[in-house]
Image 1 (tube, each protein chain N blue to C red):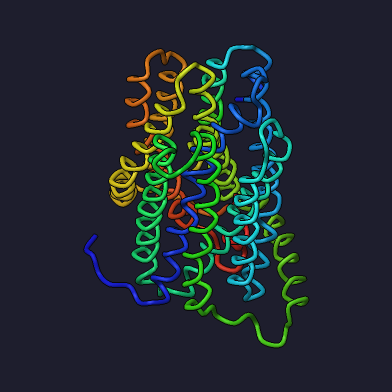
Image 2 (spheres, chains in turn orange, cyan):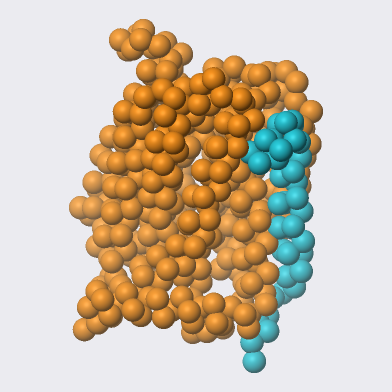
Length: 368
Length: 41
């Protein structure tokens, strides 16, 4: 794909990926699992703290699975995508920043704030995806979307790199210890997320909702769309098979992303080694994203998902037998392509590749 | 993963348990026809 300039609204839209990717790398996959186990659950059995983290992540996933269709339908019907996006982002930013203030041992407060932040993050992505059509044309949508992915890798990786330097050398930044550095990293994510969301708030103009309906009317229409969608979904076996199959696949991917760090700590690896492996995933993931896109173009989007599923099954077996830190780095190189490459690049095109009669089904109102 | 780890006391088994998710996902996706057409009337 050749580089070409995007216009200012599209750039402002893509910059939101740069903004919120800091949450998925630094907080969700990186420092939150470490702090949850070693700081907020200090002195607790490793299996018990893993269960607490797993339960928190599961609640977040279930809440989003239930809320996403409603949120998606509201966004489609109401012409309030940007408003919803900014409200969701604010929820995520607030939850992330508040983690800084949670003292050691208070795992319930940390879990609650992480839940709030994850819900805000996930909800904002629904509206972010929906806004793509407001900043692009059908001819440019794929390029603008890929541009957003690229900025996400760069932004998330860049702040994560700074946070790792803080964690490895806290004294350089005037911080007492790695725990203090991790807590400050949550604040840096909140500031980063806020600052780089401003261009979207100022520059992106979304298409107006249906005239004369008002916000309450749009909300009612959105909820009716959800009911209609599920009513039609039962008659569309292909769409249902895809949604259920993709949900299992992507939930497995999300679990590895959210629990990988906790798993490594439970096996006795050091947090420093694991964090560096995570950075490796980030940088391997960028070229891998392009490679998975090519697989999708050449062999169809389903082939990309199948390749990822086979790689992931192998990763699970390999992870089961893991014994040395060196193996963890090698595993990170394998996880990078499949995690970053497959989960977003092949997922969105796949859903649109299913043939669904126009008007019978609203794909954007079903987002898991 | 957390539940398997807690109930078995072996975190390694929790990693193996994840294979079930990928297997079930692949099973559903495999049932989609190569050139999908809607089953709607």
